Image (cartoon, rainbow, N blue to C red; front, side, top):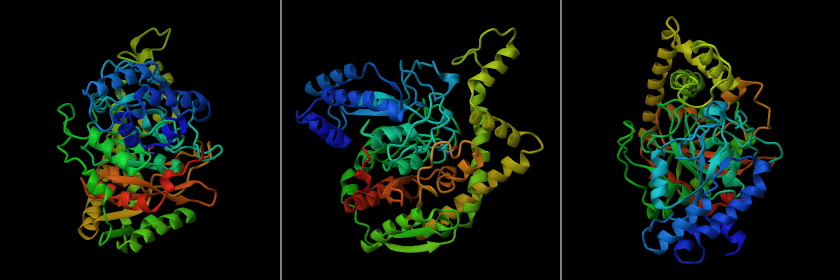
Length: 487
Ligand code: GLN
């Protein structure tokens, strides 16, 4: 098969082509490794490229031939965000703290990927410990968006989105605590799913904010994303918050009809602070659904005003507790020349963590401290209950809630680094979904005046992945935004 055909297929097409003997896992993997070698200086989307990728591919080819591997994605390569533990492969969280950490075990999602016979190409760049929206806080330098000169790819799964958008992978796994799958997918013009909390095991995902974190796929189209979700979802005894899941019926997704679908548009998602072009493109997409028979209505959702403070209080509170394990002793960064234990702790954490991570640890400790706990953390929990109520009410009336993924398209590199509050405000459309554990999809739906991709966000009830994928499939049949590339 020629190189271009290989690079332009979807993951499911690649899996089928391998099975039909039109190509091999080794041939495909080689093409991607060459492409990564060419491109990684430009985009920096990978922190680590697996030096055994071709061996993995050869093994997959052998097992496919022998009839031992029969899955739809056997032999297909994938990229993995660098906060998901991979046995024997560095897992750095883009932090100096873990820059040399080699996990002795696989995350549950990685076990599933290996059992399918997929090939791990490498580990993708991200904001340090998944804290950020631009992939600029990485210890390994920023990732760049293939769509524009000097634009950020979004974050924190910026490497995962950028590698899919630049043909450096068919698809990738990311993690989403407050938008980190959806927002980079939106900035890079690819499709990303943040699954319902609990549907995908978090075992082996380096924890940021455990009640919000969720692993999910970023891909070229919704069929690839849905297939990947089916592969990684399900109950896991190693994650007590994981649940039994009914897999998505891909045939139903492929033939989904939006006729009669009840769509709710929260007013606040189209109000002040949302870029004019973003609004326009999302509204055009909604009109397309309407023209296919969806019934669209606007409704007020004033709780959106509380999204950012609620999220940042809960996320930072959980983060400061989760990150207390990095003490310079068990693993990761160990400072030199210290005289006593206290000095070791202080130096390891002062030198091992970057600015944004330290800011969040301090914020988290502050909102949990006695005297402030009631004023901040408890208030955030109360707001969480109200947010849940608002969505429950919305879903009594609507099958799906639609809005933009982010208020803007991809920012210029450096623009928000100096102004963390500005960066936090960019999370207004995504964080609510994590607070209540809902599923949501980022769907490429157009371009702004500068030619940068715009994403539409579909939000559903708990466990409504199949419906959300169906709507996306119906939309992607009518449009080619998800296929357009700038490479
Ligand atoms: N941008 C958000 C934050 O900085 C979300 C990050 C995430 O989802 N991992 O916290």
